[in-house]
Each structure stands twice: as structure tokens, then as C-alpha cells.
Length: 288
Image (tube, rainbow, N blue to C red):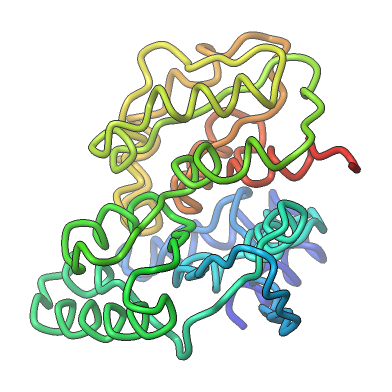
């Protein structure tokens, strides 16, 4: 409701006025209110599971993370939310999609604020739900945010086969999909969590399969969005990404990553749109 309300106001008053009002409100609140920016997303689409099940097809458990259940496409655009895009790609690849029951959370949102006990409780709830729906780990589990995937790998039972976006795409999708390479140059950004999982080469392999030319901008490491701190301490993000725009080649018009919140800051300071790697896959699909 909050994201869609902000989007509705933005569409009426324009980005310049919206930014000025947001900055003023943040100032008089003594920086307690988060700062609005032009790369803020709208609210996410409602997830509508497809209940059809084909016993001849492989099944996958898909856990839409809290952020991607909440944050949809960038303000001013009308493309589907990430969960809808992932559903499309998985069906195209011939998978049955199984969703766990309930509004589940890996617990990072709590633990990162110092609420360790609550974060652990949410992790245990998620673990129990994923074990039930995956037949005690028999089915692979796709996680659509790399920070959440890392948290789950560190806190949940090893009986679960957990896959971050680029891991899952490389292992299960590339051999099942007909892909038409995107023309021109794209940029990719390795999130801190993806680097910790050692996924840089895996991401590059996937991106090169989907695009003619792939760049990783020089000098750009952590984007410093840092969970949700980019909303409350935008100076961190501005400092970390101050050189991003100049580090991109002039013909690079799109960027891709694996964390919705990181993609907000990357879009803001690159002046191009950063989205999930599943958006890239979706755009490159050919009909069989």
C-alpha cells in the first residue's frame, strides 16, 4: 500500500516535486523518515500460483522472499514483478512449481537489527515449511534474492537443496531453454552475498549465454545499500556508487543483479535500469 501510494503521488506530481517534498519531510523529521528516490519500486503483483500439476515434469520449490513479495517493478514502468517473471521462466522450462504455505521469512530482517531470537524463530519456521513442501529435501528450492539465499544456506538444515538465482539458472534452466542472445552490452553486478558464495564466474557464464557483450564495471564492489540502510542512510549508497555511471560503457543500456534492494541503488546511480537476472532470461526466451 505504501509503495503504490508513493507511486501514485509520483505519477501526478513528477519526480522533481516528489524528490523535493521527500527531502523536506526527511529534514524536518531529523532524518527519521526514509528518503524517496526515482528508482523506488511500486508494490509487487499478487502471486497467483498455477495449481496445475503434471506428474511427468520435474518439480521445484520456489520461495518468493519478503522483498520480492513486496517490491515490484520500478516506478514508471509496467512490467510484471519478479515472482511473475520467475513463474513464466520455470513453466517455460517445463517445471511444476510448488510454493510453501504461509508468509515465510528467513529471519534476516530481524537478526540484522539485533533481534537474534526472533530471527532464529523465523528461520526455523521456514525450515519446517520447506522440508514439508520439498519432501524432506528431495526437491530443489529456488531462492530469489542472493542475500536471503546466503542466510538460508548458513542457518537452515543441509538436507535442503537451496539454490540462489544464478546457481539454479545454470544448473537447471540453460539446457532446457531456447535462448536468443540479447544484442548490445549489458552490465552485471555481483552482490556481496553472491561474492561470499563464490558465484561471480557462474553469473558471468549465465550472462554471456544471454547477451552478446557483458561488462562488470571497474571499481564497483559493495553497493552499500546494506539491507535497508540505503533508505535511511542514502549517503552510504551515494558514496559507494559515485563512480558507477562513468564506469559503464556508453552503449550499456541495461544492468542485472540478484538483489532487489541493491538494484534500486544501482539503477539510481548508473542512470540505467538494473533488474533481476531472471528478467534477462525472460527477455531472451525463444519459443520451441
